[in-house]
Image (cartoon, rainbow, N blue to C red; front, side, top):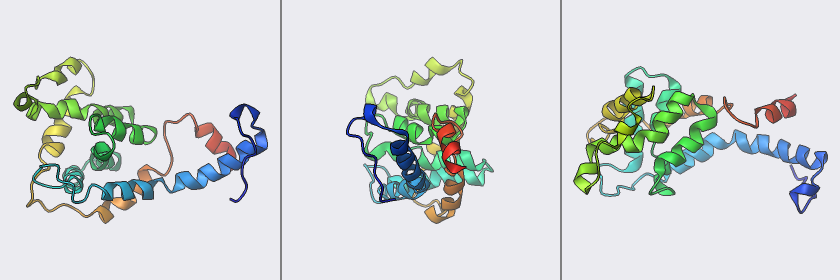
Length: 195
């Protein structure tokens, strides 16, 4: 992994350069779950005024989904739904959705991407906003599923006394969900470099 591409502008790149980059990318991509876990840990101790810190909220949301027999992909979506809080203060659902998009179903991706608007039902009116913004999606097939995600798992996950499962419990699930993208323009390239 000490080889490097030789171009200074992408237009000058050759197949050999891209073979080096593809090889390094595979190793780097394999470490994605570890980087996600490290980023989740940044949420520890960050309360933002809430009754529990953001990591606890994420663990509660995922624990509730797991205990409700949701599949691993859904549970990992629950775990990561607010991972964007640190870098996307005004669009955290978009950050989480972008991370998850190559690895989850279109349905789960949409749920994570839109959960902020749906969660707003519980508090937007206290901030002078329209709590019914989610109604713009009332004809979408994932409308009720996203309401359910917020009601059962996300909105309920601020209880300091709730016994969440530890982050280590979710690590194997995260490894499995992020083992291989389901939806990515890079799938063909990944397949060609692994043979």
